[in-house]
Length: 200
Image (cartoon, rainbow, N blue to C red; front, side):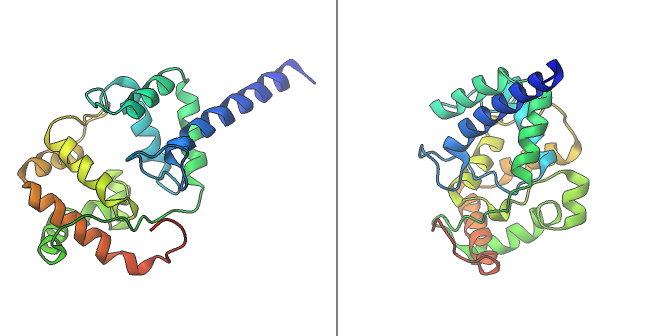
């Protein structure tokens, strides 16, 4: 085997080990229970960007969660090219819809969602233009935690744009009940489009 072949083999083995580490929290059936989202099927562009955000300390640095800080340390030990490989691997997986919801008023949350969320997070054109993730497949508690983090300026970006700034500003305008209501609507409205295969 050539020297180049050996290096590529080592890189693949290293990346497999990293991927298994990520899956310990982010898999459909993780080894460790946390509020981490299932990454399967999320957009490659979005996943790679979030890895950079965590590694740079723009996201997660103020978290009290031990798993978040473990992830930050692991990401900081990787090369940027490995971010892209990990993101591609997760993006190629079949997407997973979490049915886990929160206690909110979905009827009150519907107009909030339609006015503030749909354009960037549902519309294919809007998602392509803004780079926004398909939040409908994420678990309710995770959505709530992220809206609260945006409102508390605990989520920032290595690459700012008007859409991300709008997300942060909008989160500050939502009350705690608004956050629960819009999340409850998201989980009730889009659940019918997905079979209940694994986690409930």
